[in-house]
Amino acid sequence: MLGRLRARLAGGGADGGRLTVRTGGGLLALGGGGSARQRSRGEEHVDTPLLVITAALVLLGVVMVYSASITLADSPRYKVTPTHFLVRHLFAIAVASAAAVAAFSVPMTRWQRLAPAAFGAAFVMLVIVLVPGVGTGALGAKRWIPLGILNLQPSELMKVASVLYAASFTVRKQDYMHSLKRGFLPIGAVMVGIGALLQLQPDLGAFIVIVAIAMGILFLGGLNGRLFVAITVLLAIGLAAIVWLFPYRRERIFAYLDPWSAEHVLNKGYQLTHSLIAFGRGEWFGVGLGGSVEKLHYLTEAHTDFILAVVAEELGLVAVLAVIVAFYWLTKRAFEIGRQAVALDRTFAGLVAQGIGIWLGVQSFINIGVASGLLPTKGLTLPLVSYGGSAMLATIVAIGLLLRVDYENRVLMRGGRA
Image (tube, rainbow, N blue to C red; front, side, top):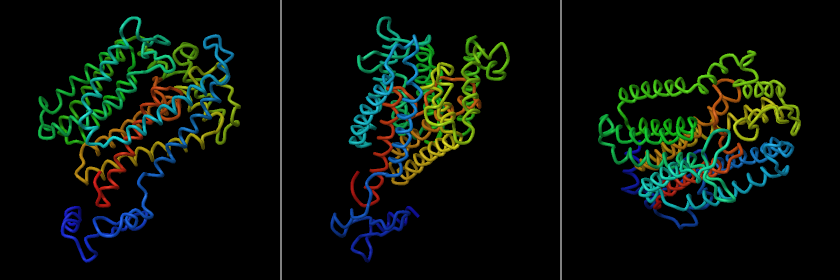
């Protein structure tokens, strides 16, 4: 089909070199012929549904962050005004939106050239955050570089850098994807280095997402199937060892298995039990916006990792299902954009889009699974919804890159140049 399409584009046709293709949105003109106004009339240059779903999740996050954090003004731990977290969240969204516009304006060919440098910069920041007197921490973790108005979390930026670098590596090593030595070991060594730095913070959740991104892109890029399975098994064993060797992580697993026991309910199972109480109180349609009881200093980190529990309590299971559907659609759409780019011989751009889909899918699945008791407790934000400036910056920039891939697809399909 693609070969016939290319032949017709190359050879022209009865319509002055134009080819009209019927799509879900109507007729699409490819190739020359007709004025620029005629070719662009009624055609969208950006994916409007993607923008709408993204904006809806961000707006839901704004409302729920304010609802979940307004009572923290009474907490001696924070000592802030009721609108403190809302203002910072809105500022992060503004900065992230400007950064996404900048990312969208850069062609994917240039991003391919910049990928190693972006990865190197993110790696250096992972080192800097561990330097005494530079990085700051909270709740036993040292993950942020203070920049005055914004605390930068390098592990979040590493997710974007990992998408770009893994896609670039896969394209460069396309002829060696069947080889362990030349197709996997170089990027495997890089992932080990990232894991070591993240373990010192510690931030196991970010490492899991980054590994999922890299392995997913390698697999989609043609990594040998048997090699992929063998490496995945080894990674699973390594992850289990990391969990087992650290008592506090081991206790989380035991608490997850029986959170309501007297041993765990006020200890490692505390967050999970109160999250489940929030889900139970919300029933189908919730207790009403602002009516959550669990956010009144019972459920810790209600505005970040466990914001979905507040959504469930105040807006009900219906709202939770809507959030799940939205992330499913975003993930599916990212893969569709990626497949379309690959079909247009834009492998790097296609792998970037699919890598973003893997990122959004894996991280949202983990966050939703943790909040609902499906998975053991792990500190990961809900993309586009939870409070967190660096997470918002990285995720919205990723959406900007996804829109850029789709934009270039559309331009090429209309006979233009990306």
